[in-house]
Image (cartoon, rainbow, N blue to C red; front, side, top):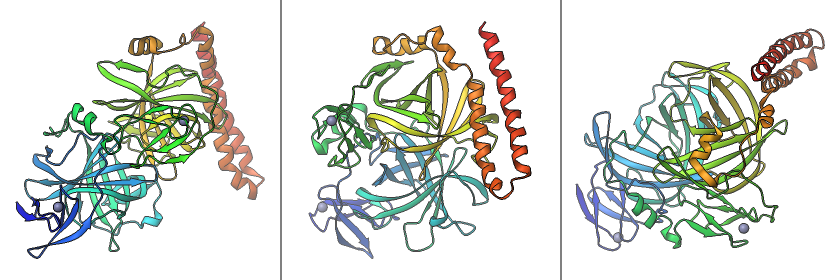
Length: 491
Ligand SMILES: [Zn+2]
Ligand SMILES: [Zn+2]
């Protein structure tokens, strides 16, 4: 370890790693550059936003038999949220990054690319790319800005520094290409990790997080709507966007100033089976409902999604449709899919068959979300099913994410939430709403096929329409049979 004096305030500044180029003075936020045995004052950097991350400088852990220490951090924000990149140094003096976004963690290390990497401009999420000899699916492609820094860092970085990065996934493997510098892009490879599996030590405990999170504003976990004064719960650093449930005003929570993005109009009070703020014990895990969102598909069928957060358990979703309830979690380990148009995807050697894909639009949102959500947001959803388990890929123009959901019985919901859960659950009459679902999904397929065939049809009025009709009927007829069997089973 090398200790120098801060050129601005004289305090001790430590460099534990030889690879560190600069360090942020913890007393005055001056960026101290280490250069040929001398130190240079690079000016100040913003303090990091005190967020909900349990990680801090000094946290240690082990990965692949090697111990590491967290020595620095940059905080980045992009148009839909923010995340932390923790700079880690292994005990063999190599280094890497521990990415920390909405309670999902990944460790990446620099590696030399064997072939030319794709250009940033040519990337879009949800597409397969051949990188480092393997097929990866692009997950997100984004430009982000540094909003704060702390500790030691391996390159010169300051407020407003722009990161141009693309993430790729393959099973639990993770790959980042960093296009931030003018030179050739840098390739980082790694894996999704959990803090438990890495046996992390010196994590911040729940009490400390609660005490410090959001400290910069003097508010802990709620803020008053700047438009109407209604109190809105939020989680600094974890929730990127807030939507007031009384007046629909949208607030940017990934910004220390909590600026209003759009003033809303006071709306009719919406009815929800699980109101905002409801708390429940899912198994032995405590969760609270922090966000509620309604979405609809192309045909206008609607459903409600509840975002839940537990300080020890991260985020989880409960989804209410006319067919009942299900619980969904974001997948750390991505399915193996050649493309999103594949008829099946594989996870842990189990195949999931494609049900359908459809467009969805957000029709209502209220509360706190870990990305910036607004009414009118479009997503294309691909669903795959194996027995009771559904995998869904949700694709936007900048991001692809996977989730896994399983059905939850009304009795289970009641056991989890007790009186917080409103309504009576589904009566047998409601259960009929679930019928004809095979037909509905087949119909989506047919619409898709007709759309795909519409282009050749413009050029060739002859052959292809017949093929489409035959193919459409071959999907639709078995669906009618399946619905009839379902009917039969109920009687
Ligand atoms: Zn200083
Ligand atoms: Zn309001």
